[in-house]
Length: 261
Image 1 (tube, rainbow, N blue to C red):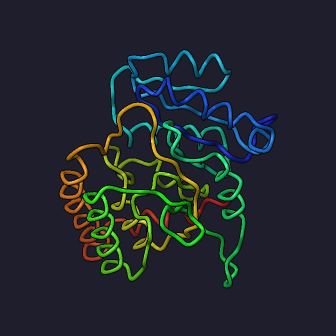
Image 2 (cartoon, rainbow, N blue to C red):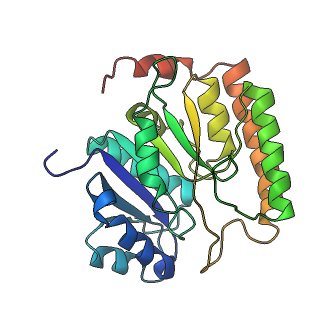
């Protein structure tokens, strides 16, 4: 792998020139740079996101057309597989995900539980003891509570922050996500947690430091959380039927067993 690190940080970005530079500056600090490379997935931004990223000598993939958040992540997973990374940590470009979380997620990915098992997915949670205070709107509170309930009923697991975009993934996980029809390339969120928990992937939560967005427009602003809740509800139900009733992806999990990282 030469100078390539074990960890690839994937940052989906759409018109984030005002916020991504401070994020990249923090990722360039020695404590992060010595363990991780950075890949920015520029989703056909009309601003200078592409330029400012390249100016700082980070890898960037720019879509010709706007493909959406999920497509950017999945292409990043394919890149990580091709380049032989061991872990992926995905974070937002808007400054909400504090860079101090990166070493903690990396450590958690390498820490075995009481049964000697390593996690497949590490979630950075806004709502655990030890997390920083993170104010949310009433609409979002309703959505979070609803998705927590759906996941608990569908999998038996209680997840405090089912919509967090700050996640660490093992090689086995992002290899699975990189394959056709294994990942929601439009709205990957609580539906992906439902899928991965039902397929037996090990999910762990750790408290995270997060901040409110100060620039730009969130993709979940205004009434979008309510509309998103309805859309995601149907997606989560579809995943539950697919995995719990129809068991459509069991063969794909068995196929992963031939890989050893």
